[in-house]
Image (cartoon, rainbow, N blue to C red; front, top):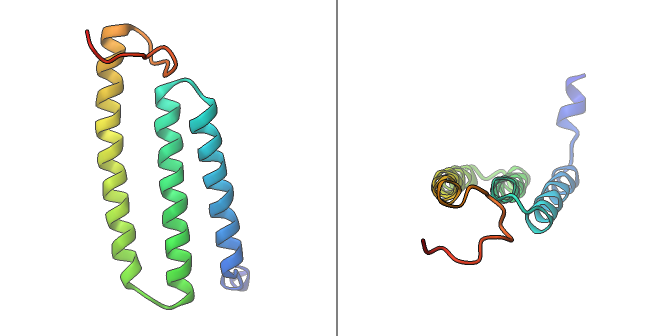
Length: 106
C-alpha cells in the first residue's frame, strides 16, 4: 500500500496542478461573485505551489520549499486584503457582483 504513494511520477503532480489551475481559471472568468473569484485565484496559486514542489521533488531540492512558503504567505495576505475589500464594497453597495462594480467611488 505504501508503494502506491512512492511510485507517483512528476507527471501525476503536474496533471493535478494543471486540473486545479484550469478549475481556477474557469472559476475566475465565469463567476460573478467576488468571493468565488478570490477562491479561484487562491486555487491557481496553490496549483503553482504544487508545480514548484513537484519539480523540487524531482531534483531533490529543499530550497524550493522556502519559496513555496513565501508564496503561501503572499497568498494569505492577498486573501486577507481581498476579503477586506470585498466586505467594504458589500457594505456600501449591498452586493458582491463583479460585473455590477463599475466604479469604486462612493
